Amino acid sequence: MIFLRALALMLMPQAVLACGASVCLVNPQEFALPEIITFDDTPSGSGPGRLVDDVLALPGAQFGEHFAGQQLSPKGDHDTVTGAAFGPLILLPGADGQNLSVVHFYGNALLNGYGAAGYPKREGQGEGAIAVLFDRDQSAFAFDLRGGEAGTAHVQFLRRDGSVIGVVPISPTGEFEVGFARNPGIADIAGFVVTNSDPQGIAIDTLRFGKIPDLS
Image (cartoon, rainbow, N blue to C red; front, side):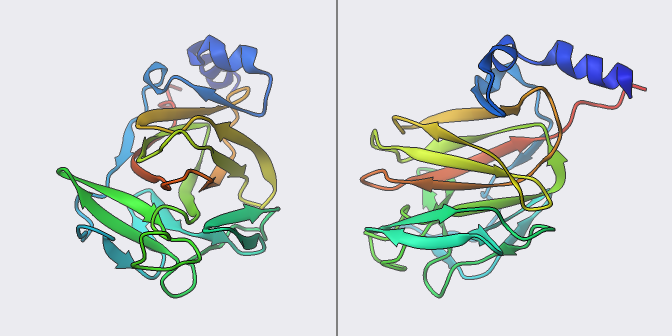
């Protein structure tokens, strides 16, 4: 166990060690993350996408709107999610028309959150919260941010007991991959919630995660 801890610290990007926060925004290319979830095999549609009205379960993680015990409220057309959750984490879908959709876009499938305006309204698409619950606790992960128009997104990180580890802002938003790493390499990220105030909303794609191999 001590050996694995030392190995994790050696493999950790220097940006994490210098960050000082509980979770750091890092270059995802510095990590070898072995597990990948795309939405390409999930039924999708063009335009507003194909509505997902319940929790979406895929190998390694589940996708919904927020966690039981959190406060969900609208701010304009966008969702806000605040506070700790009940433990152990329970992932919840949004209300009817306010959960998720999978959109087929230029050969890829993207995951949208729908805000208070609801599906299939354009002012609701990409404005809603997206919550993710991992099957196993993680120390690092990354995903592709899609559709951002120089707004702001926030990623809240939670332990499996529902307590909040921290919140990391992404500003400005755009079309790029973002990576996150727990400082100093603790594997206790059980779930996260993405919210945004981007003028056009955002989507996510290609979630990457997974632990350092056990070399003992």
